[in-house]
Amino acid sequence: MNVCAPPPTRITDQPNDVIVENGDGPATFVVGAEGENLTYQWLRDGVEVTDGGNVSGATTPMLRINPVRGEDTGRYSARVRGDHGEVLSEEARLGVLIACMADIDAADFFTFLDFFAAGCP
Image 1: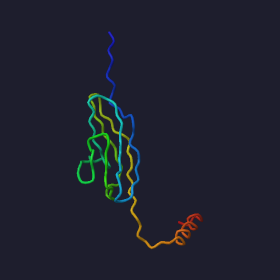
Image 2: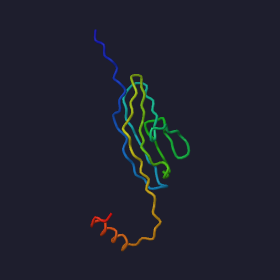
Image 3: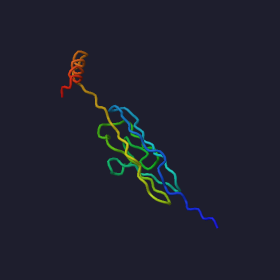
Image 4: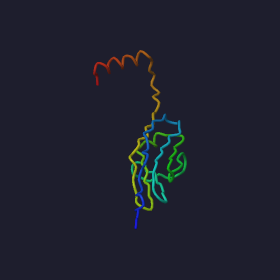
């Protein structure tokens, strides 16, 4: 008699870091998993994400944030549950670039680079 145990629930593709400018988007996180009867729950900084506003896909393999706002910054991971276990993906970071409204011209920028190259803190 040959009895095969069902494969455990496992992550096959980890989500990747995303960097987006404030107000742009979408920021998309995707997780791949194998197992039987899989369910998904995305987390931001360890707290469950819910659909609404600019967020969709909180309980699917693909989380979408559009448009991205500064308060969306964080570490996102997916909890995947199946008939044969529960796993948590690695964290992927969402970085949100906020435009600087300072009055900086090319000369200021090159001065900064000179100081930076010289090791000035």
